[in-house]
Length: 259
Image (cartoon, rainbow, N blue to C red; front, side):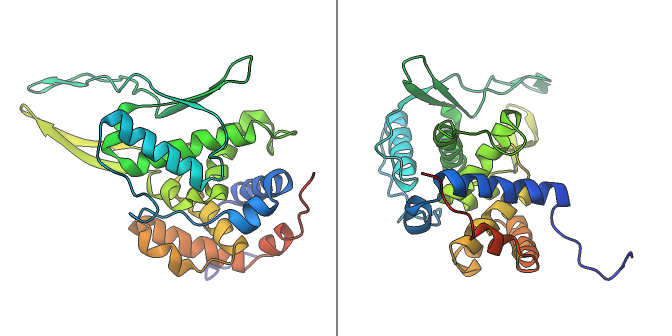
C-alpha cells in the first residue's frame, strides 16, 4: 500500500541490489585480511597525501604511488604514462568548439605478457582529487581483472563494478566528491560554465558504496562526513539510514572469502 509519509530510499531497488551484490562478489574474492584488517578510509588530507612539489611527471608519480600504497597494491607492477590531454574548445573571443569529446581520465591495459599500463590525462594535475579517483578506478580495474568470475550481471557491468571496487578499496570519499564537477571558465572574451564528472556512477550511487564500506568496516560516519561535499553529505546520511533499515550488512558479513 502506498504510504505518502514513507521515507524515500536513496537508490532504486535494482541499483541498491546491484551494489550489494558487487560488494558480495568483492568480499568473496578480495575480502580476506586485505579488506577486513588492512583497508581503511582514505581522506583528502596532507597526512594521507604528503605530496612534494615537483615536475608534473613527479607529482603524478607521487600520487600514483601513494594511491597504490593505500590500496595495498604497492607491489603490483604497473607502468604509469601520461596520455593525450583534452582538446582546446575555447579558440578565441566568443568562439567555442562544440561536441568535442574530452580525452579519457585514465586507461588500464594489459598486454599478452601481462605487462600492465595505467595512463592518465595530464589535465588531472589541476584537480588532485579527480587524479586520485582516476588512479583508484584504474587500480580497481587491475584488481578485478584477476577475479575468477565476472561481476554481477557479467563483464558488461565491469566499469560500474570497478567504480564500486574503488570504494571497496577505501577511496569512496574521493569517488563520491568527484562524481560531479561544476566550474566556471573564462578568458579572451569567453566565459561560461562547464560540468564534468569522473567515473560511471552518480554521486548518490557512489555515496551508497561509501556507506557500505563504512558500515562493513565499523567506521563512524563522522570520519567521512567532514570531508564530503554538501550533496554527498546528504546522500551519505540517507544511504546509511537505508542500510540500517535493512539486513544488507548482516548478510554481507556472512560472506566467506574463497581461497
